[in-house]
Amino acid sequence: MNFLKNYQEFKNNLYKKNNLFHLVIVIIIFSLDRFSKINVLNNFNDNTYYINSFINFDLIWNIGIGFGLLSTDANVIYSLITIIIALVITFLLYIFVISNTLDKFIYAIILGGALGNFYDRLVYKAVPDFIDLHFNNFHWFTFNVADIFISLGIVVFVLRSFFIKN
Image (cartoon, rainbow, N blue to C red; front, side, top):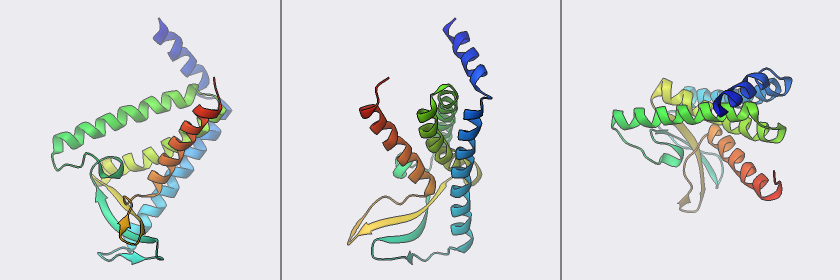
């Protein structure tokens, strides 16, 4: 019975103007990610491009999840991770639709990035990461534009939970 109530709430909220506005944010973030990756893929070779003393562009292919975790050559594990990511994105879409305005913005940021990386998993069977932040010999995990938005959305979500109580 609760499922039917939630489904009805989802259906009633789906076409609200507020959702469409935030869906545009998802599309913009997805497009920024695609643009950056297409640009890198079309203009990179095996070289590292030194931008300054703290950032390089160095293309690597990530077959795992965030920061290369769970990287494996096993097709079964890769497919299982991809299915789990699809389920998480589906759940986030549902939460996005029924959330309040601030939460919609947070979920829109996360969804835009998540869809960008999910697209790469489906098309390339790996996610191109290319932003390499470093200080002297310490290198952070290589990441991409989608990862920036996913991380930003999660940080804002956590901060919101500290400062805004429901």
